[in-house]
Length: 289
Image 1: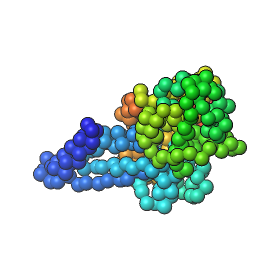
Image 2: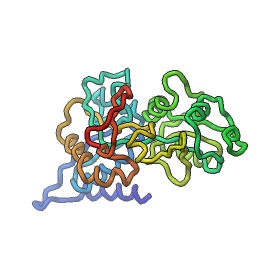
Image 3: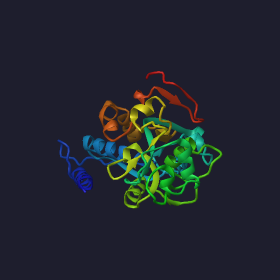
């Protein structure tokens, strides 16, 4: 509620602010669409940017990485936010897009608190999402059916989770799907026995994150690739950015965002990564760990 009021206040202020010469400030806006995992960071950075640059607005919408990539490829928006490389989306021409990596995000399975399970093996997690394991008691937890909740098919969070958990050979059980990470968290929190997955930035006290093979979902473990379920947060433009789009992307990579806002919101600065990945999933030591 406070955040909503803050946004309304910024909008009203920007509409009324005058320059020292008494002229109305020119208004300008851009639109960024896509990844819900990246959405909280871009929204927060956009609000900071607008507060520091009166009359400049950053409109941020979700919809998933698939939407972000298709919209920017069609030149329908200024920025397409994505958790996956554009090259992984076969429905677009990635050669025309410019990749701006602004952060790294870890992704973790989450469950309703009280299942009695806090750690699973990778094979057990595969069994849950393929429907072979259907009750928490099979994993040493309470006698409670497991409900699998997936993100929608266009979700970059889902694509990353399935790539590193299920691989190419396994398919997730048919289940309820949701387009928003926030909705996923709410359903998991309020529906006993439910399991899904979200970016680290969405984990709070209402849900419980699971360890895998004894490895905890932490920024440190992502940075060394000990926790393998992670992705870059990409902000794509159709060619080289100009004007307000370029200025905002420069702001996203500034110390003001990279040095404070990213970690405060649960993301990982790229400069803290000790490994790098390409779109095929190959991992090499980072040049600047």
